[in-house]
Length: 464
Image (cartoon, rainbow, N blue to C red; front, side, top):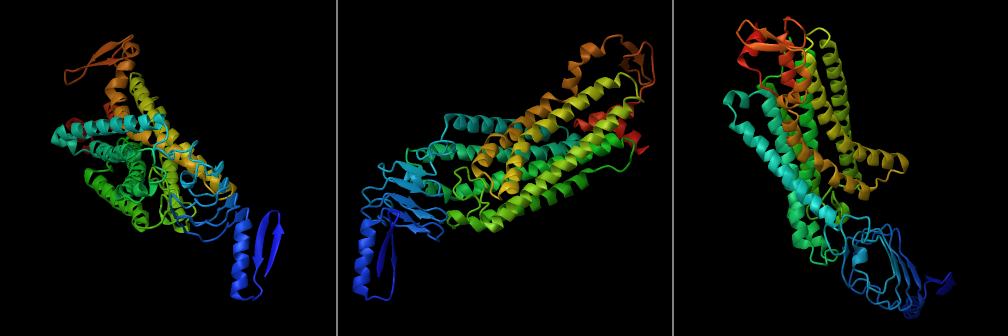
């Protein structure tokens, strides 16, 4: 056996010596080893005091190892250990206090710390505020839709908005689960006991809920966009989305989304961190781009939602163009309706799209540069931005309703108003100086966009 010193590292080369002398040299090597480089191995477990005997060990490199199982006493033993470099989350929470340098650090730029599941008070407050707002708002939308007249309850806009509210309600449940978990597991030693939460069945449920809610909310919005597109661009067409067609489309959408969201969660149950869809994410959020099969799933998720947004943007552009063209051929007072339509459409589109754009940017930049996605930044974006849709949507649909926005322009719309008596004895108000012919079908098509149910008169006109 030959013992060779090189840059304060000791290596041993076996040349078929007898066991006694080899064991002696191994002990000699372990005694004088100052730096240990064990990168790029398949190390899954570090047992208690596994480095005992390396009395001169100061630097330890552990990158590119699984390190699924680490214990609080794993790094105890070497008296002079001062640097530990690895990639495993929460590893630095288990090193002795004498270690001066440890990576990855869990004390800054992370959602969790060695002490708390949610590291920042702002994050804790945000989770609870958005969760409660989303829960209350979406429950109110569902209650309001359920308490409406049976005929309006079964119309297309109400069914679609109710399904969107259910999707957003799922997100609120996810946020409240994380908030409660923070209260239960943040006892000052979360980093050491993180696996007790990450392997908890509730964490798997939370992972399923956030995947399902984010996916279904986008898919429901596609169906809503198609319905609005048909009603506005082709207001006189007899081919429309009926309640039966919408319910079939929603059933297929929910079934496929549930299966798609549940598959990676099911395969993660009972597996170590590197084989879980969310690895060591305390938010139970999918981020395992290192695993080939999970990366395919997440790229597929990214592709489906991205294509959905492209479709919606194209439909909205076509809707804006149709509104602009129709305003030239109908009465001038309809400009108020067009303003209401444009404002509501722009608010809904922009608020939802703005929350998704950073998510797409991080993924595209990561895949384009070196194939590695910044999962920490991705978790911050997915935690702070994506849930905003669930909290804003119910209030946005209420505050930007047709009647509410119409009141904003009432002072402007009532200038130079001339009353007009309709054949049915009702009074309409035009912005022109004299009575003019009104094209009521176009106006009703605008109301369809803002989720106002078609009344009997409009249905009779369409059928005729």
